Amino acid sequence: MNTTHTQGPWIAEYRNRSYFDIFAPSAHAADSPRASKVAEICSNGNKSIDEMRANARLIAAAPETAAERDRLRTINSELVDMLARLVSRMHAMNDDRDPLYRAIVYDADKAITRARGTA
Image (spheres, helix red, strand yellow):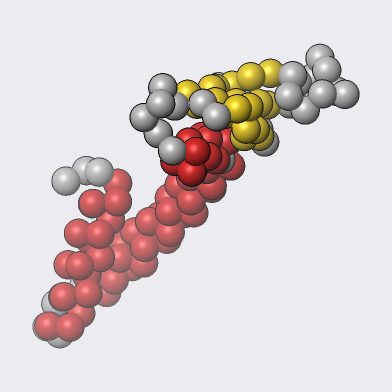
């Protein structure tokens, strides 16, 4: 998947009572890990420092979270394809007399449809 966001890792840094900054490394300033500001968390007096810190860490984790999401999507797709091949083979066996067999094939067909969003 092509990344269209600022590359990570991102760093959350406490600036003062009301602000946290989120920085990303910059290729143009190798000596400064804070060369590119990605976001700023501002309290406006209505958020505690703990809440601001938690929000800043959540935002700073965005690149890693997106990478993990993409990895899990790939795994999910592979598992759904494998299940579809298995069900296809089971359909070819066509042993509809066995109620357990029918239940397994029915549930697997439903899971494949739901996972592929084709319901």
